[in-house]
Amino acid sequence: MPTVIVSLARQPGVQMELHYSNVAVIGRGSFGVVHLATLTNSGEAVAIKKVLQDGRFKHRELQIMRVLDHKNVVQLKSFFYSHGANDAEVYLNLILEYIPETVDHVERHYSRLRQPIPLIYVKLYSFQLFRALAYIHNIGVCHRDIKPQNLLIDPITSVLKLCDFGSAKYLVEGESNLSYICSRYYRAPELMFGATNYKHSIDVWSAGTVLAELLLGQPIFFGTCCLDQLVEIVKVLGTPTMDQIMEMNPNYVQLQLPFVEAVSWSRVFRPGTCAEAIELISVLLVYSPERRLKPLAACAHPFFDELRKPNRELPNGHPIPTCVDFTVDELGAEASLMSVLRPQSIELCTSSKLVPHSALETSLSAVEEEKKDIGAAGDSSDAHKIA
Image 1: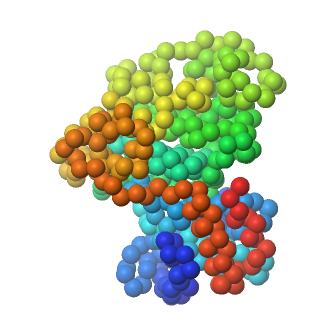
Image 2: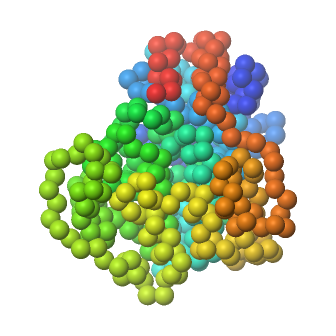
């Protein structure tokens, strides 16, 4: 039965002894390994994400996750550092709430049945994704790897939680960013044009491709490589104009694209596909980053009106998760959307969960102190700077 000293995610400087058991690997990736474990005292199942702290790379996940607090974002409970085969190998272990399914699992399930995903689930999953994006974008965080595998789903309640902030970054105006980011099928076109000063709208593009995939049962842009991915996008959206290319990356001058005419969105989807869903996708998947619908405006789209009706049930008989409990901070300055996102019969929640960038810096300082306290090697400290 492993016993570790963990630092609490929400209480900087506070540590406690934690016992866990029944450890099993449930996921692997380039980031590291995810284990399922049981907390001995409470019996609660948790996910433990173990990530090597390689000094060659920046590791922002812990600092960002410590300030995230939203119903549609996976919760970080605590964390600890451990060593590998030698003291030079330092691992960060994130103890997260455990959610057993993903949108990817749901897609595969219905694919095996040769059935489309019920529209109510398409609405519910995509709405919660846009709500999560509205929240993290409001505090300046860009996820940079939106895809079905990173959207956790409670199979009973259908509550969605955005996870895996390993690629996330607090975007700063004028600061250069990595362009080779995000999984290929969900990568925004400006990234393929080499943009390094992109905005949070790359997440909106990714979310639009996820919505399209939920309707189609497969990725809407199925490229075999980076260049082919761009070709697949052009086949649908047509060749971008020079103005659109400049909006995506004003420094791009390398590629001359042949003219391809855009196709009607209705031809991309099956006959009978919800017209409101197609209309929403048409304002998400556009070349010009600034013209993509903002996440909060997407939540207010008529496609999601069914979710705002009272006493609605899922196919399994459980009530639809509440979709109208937006807080003051979530709504922000978007007063024009309030009447849609929060019906008058719902009392407005005033609890504030938005955290400014200064809190990220405070979190960073606290983490560095805790690393010193528990004896983690200081060689990897540079990897934790918010860039």
